[in-house]
Every structure is written in C-alpha cells, then in structure tokens.
Length: 177
Image (tube, rainbow, N blue to C red; front, side, top):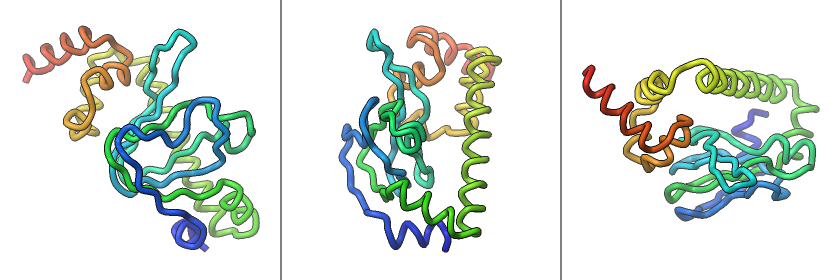
C-alpha cells in the first residue's frame, strides 16, 4: 500500500476557510495533513506574543506537528490557512501502524522523513549562516509566487527581519537588477 492509497482509504477531505486554524500551539492534534489546494502558514508564538514563521505550505506539501503526534505533548506550533484551502487529514496512528506492517509504505515514509529533515536543515542553515539579503534572494528564487500570496510582514517574519529591514533589502535587490 502506498501513502496515496492509505490517504484514499483512511483520509478525510477538508475544506477550510481563510483564517481557519488546523491546530494551535499546545493543542492535542494527532493528524497529518496533505495540502491539495490553497496556502498554509506554520508559525511559533513566543511567550511575549512574537510570531516566528516556520514555513509556508503550498499544494503537495504534507505537515503535522511531529511533537504533537508522536510524543503526545501537544503541538509545538500553529497551523493556519492563509487562503481557502483543500486538505486531506489522516490520523498519525493509522499511518504509523500501517508503516510498521508494510515495507513499501515504511520505505515511502522513510523517504518522506529524509526529505523533511533536509528541508529543515536547509532552513536552519539559511537562518543561522546566511545574511538576510541572501535569504530574501533564495526565497524569491525558489518561491516567487509567495510574494503575491502573503503579506510583506509575513515575508519579513519568515526571513527573520523587520518590515523596515525587508523594505531596505528589496530596494537593494531591485537596484542590482
């Protein structure tokens, strides 16, 4: 059985409105979500109310709070729809139990987790080692549509800069053509 077959058999289609949360930090949510259409934002909220954007999700992306589904300690981040979105929700326990019994599915999950880890490693590298202007250029190169879909404040939060800093970066980049 493949992950797509598992989703077809056990997944539940969801239609979510803009601004709707799939889960919030601390919630008990043991599901994985496949985004079929729309746009999601995953973010952390600090104790002082500061929003730190973890990622934006586009169609084809899969997400869930691994801490929430595996450690049962609650979700570590918030997941909200930035536009009307179509998703498929599947309980993690179903994926986990089928993966233990099905070698093909287990391999597919291993490949998924490796890609996920590489994506997180790339994000870490960018935040810790690259200057903000380079992070901006990379985002512009890899996901140009995002700039039409999210607010400048969200782009700034994702890049780890202030909105004023983002404005200065944009002017410098546009000036170099």
